[in-house]
Amino acid sequence: LLLALDANPQVLACMAEQQRQAIREWQGLFCLINDTYLASPQARDEHYETIGFVPRHDVPLAGLQRAVLASVTQGAEKLLPSLLPSPDFYDRREAVRARLESILVTLPEVPPGTTLDVFGSSRNKFGSDSADLDMCLSWPAETPAPEDSTAVIESVSRALIASGTAAEDELSSRPT
Image (cartoon, rainbow, N blue to C red; front, top):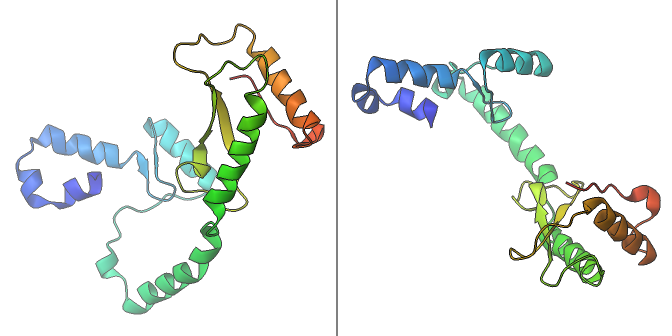
């Protein structure tokens, strides 16, 4: 959006110079490589140090040779299938979620109406077949949070182990 604003002369003409400068400053805090907005110039510089280079915002695609664009497109099309989840990805994840929820809602520490909700890449459709499955227990709105969340998580861990769903060394759970 910021790049589009800066590239549109009609929009720029409607803006004060101070607004145009602010847009350019905000553009400088956005990393196009991993779609990340950075909070400050210092955070941006640290980020670029981490990824090992400074992305260029000023290279228009129209200036690239057709052969370069064709090669990049061909490479992306070849790589894309390996990045996309399999057709049954979401159904398999939902089956896991439903099975776990059916175990967890039977626990005395879990109030009626509690759900097991998926979040992260499995929810936002950016997951891959090898991605983890992030889930959290969601208490009903009218139910106060447990006083001892650690006891609830420990009970959940015991139930998953007892059901044969997980081995003790496979669990990664934390009371957040």
